[in-house]
Image (cartoon, rainbow, N blue to C red):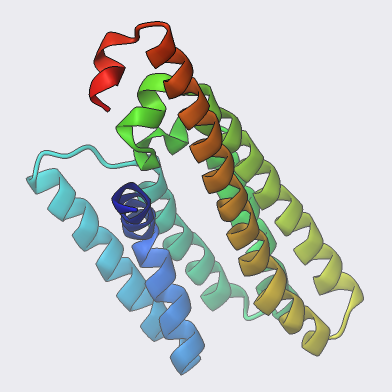
Length: 195
């Protein structure tokens, strides 16, 4: 369970400024306050990581960029349709970053990377596809349905689909990695006998 917890913590850390922006905005309705907190947190995280000599992950840069670009655009446009379409643009940006092969490696336990690196690589592309599909569905709901239906869609589908894919990935990764480990041990996989 610890590898799952560690992966979740890495992911939350990488998207922390975006999550804080969304949370503060949802709680207060103030794009100014949400932008300020999200921006300050994103910059503080990058400074903290740099001072510790750690590389800044692509997802951390993306999170900070999303706060800057989309909150800035909201402040400038004050356009209701842009605000409704903004989540689709965010999903497209996240999906584009997820097309980078191996982005998911950071979130995987060592045993998966050592024995079945193709699994997180493949699921990285599946996640990108889900982001693009969620963005496309968001556009459809923004253009074709009233605000109440649109809000209900945003409250259910994005989170529900990601939780479902996470559960599928977790189960598939565990099963396939365990099979691979058993096969390698049966073939005399040396170092894997210590796992």
